[in-house]
Length: 195
Image (cartoon, rainbow, N blue to C red; front, side, top):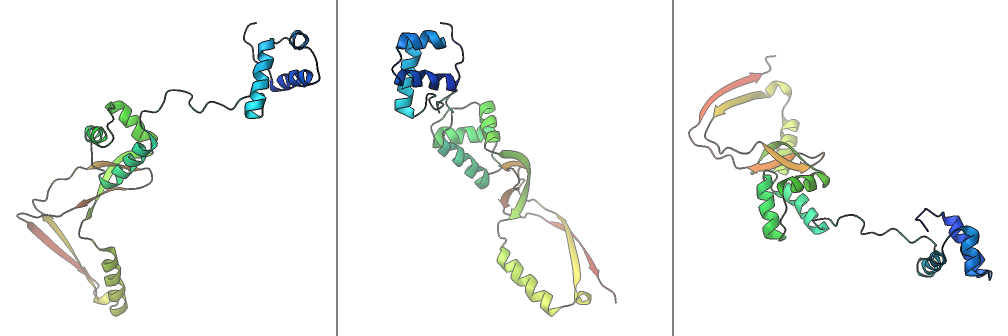
C-alpha cells in the first residue's frame, strides 16, 4: 500500500476490533490498512501506551555546540565582551576542543541571545558602596547653595579600548577600564548657585 496518513481514531478502532477477536486479515481489508500496521500499533501501545509513538527528540541535525559550551559562551560575554569572533573561535578550540566557522559561531551566539553593541567603560577602581555612602553623607550635611559643581575636560594618553562588544540582550556590554594616564592637558570649569 502507498503511504498515507492514518488518523489516531482509526488506529484505535483497528486495535479495538483486534482485541474483540476479529481476524487480522478482515480488519485490514475493512479499514484499508495493512496487517503489518496493526502489529506496529499494538507494539506502540505496549511500549508507549498510545497508538502514536512520542516524537523523536533527535530530529534534525545534531547541534554543534552542547549546552555546556553555550553556557560558557554566555559567561564569556560577561567576562570579556570585547572579544572578536576569531578570538572566541580560538577560545572554543582550546577550551572545548571544537572547530567552528565564524559564520556558524555568529549564528550560535545570536541564538544564545547575545548581541553586538556599543560598550560602556566602567572604572576598575569604582566602589559602588563607597559612592553611595559619600552621597548619603553629603546630602545630609549640605544644601544646594553650598555645592559647587566642577567639570574637567582633559586629553591624555589613556589606553585605547575597543568600542563594541557582545552581551546578553537587554544588558549593557561593560568592560572594566584602568584609566592609566600619560601626559595630561586639562581645562576646568565650575558652576555654583549664586543666591
